[in-house]
Length: 171
Ligand SMILES: [Zn+2]
Image (cartoon, rainbow, N blue to C red):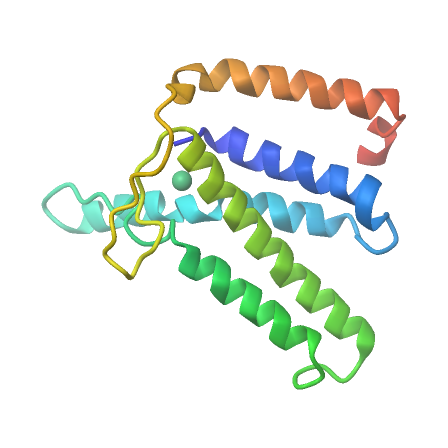
């Protein structure tokens, strides 16, 4: 698995780049980047659940990668986004745009997480609840360099932000 920081950082960076270069600031409010960053880490809530279940049971329970790392969740959030973008749920256009964007960004962050875990060589049940082995993830040993990758990404992003004068965006 990729480190927690990597999941949040890469998702935020990609969303930020999309915001600046594709969608534009007006159509992509900054809170969506926060939503995406949280969603980028969210599939790992199974680690927390494992701790809790282990605590209350006598043995060690590991649910990591068992169900939350599934494309099923991506489809689910995407579907919610589509439903919210129609006029079935929200009457006002602004609400439709806001809530569909939030769920599309969650689906995006979730996808980024699965993609990164796979890139880092993790074997997860990507197709849960279908019990199909997904062993297509490359075994390049990327996870051995996880800390260095984080450091390089962070530096590149700060340089990019500074070059464009975006650092003041943060404050
Ligand atoms: Zn994970």
